[in-house]
Length: 192
Image 1 (cartoon, rainbow, N blue to C red):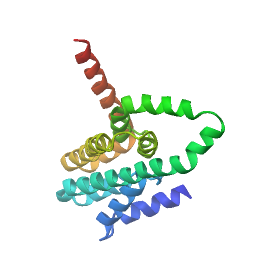
Image 2 (image 1 turned 180 degrees about the vertical axis):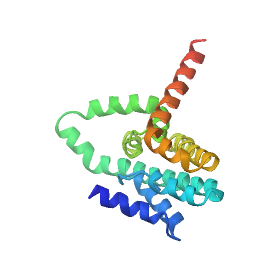
Image 3 (image 1 turned 45 degrees about the vertical axis):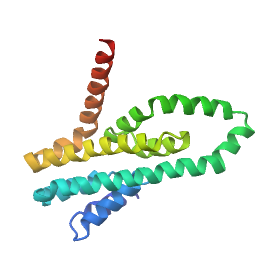
């Protein structure tokens, strides 16, 4: 079933509705959908490198909008369903402690999840659940998702089809290394 969904998503890249399809996939992937927008983004940019940056902008903005929907899911469903269950089991205090820890590092969690293979939808929902500051969440999401999609766009625009195989095989590793270097750099600066 997942393979059929993936194949249908790839087929959308060749249609005249591809930008709308990309926006839809990027939106729902940020809160519930299992197929990443890269499945459309990559073939669309390869087909129209002159539109690479417009395609990346659509993916970024739709993904952040979908992240806000995920935030709303975490915020709304936790209060109506999650909290009563935690209270029944006497774990509401543990949830509050987790919320405080998550919110202390929440912007970093959003940044890391936004650029690495870690499911961004998990962090969007958790951000709403813990009540992470909405402005912090939105700014971190714009930076992270923009970094992810614009990096792919720049690489494909510059290097074309030869970059496709490399990106598809090593995208997660590239972003993970970038995040490790970024966090390591801030740690070094903080130690100085």
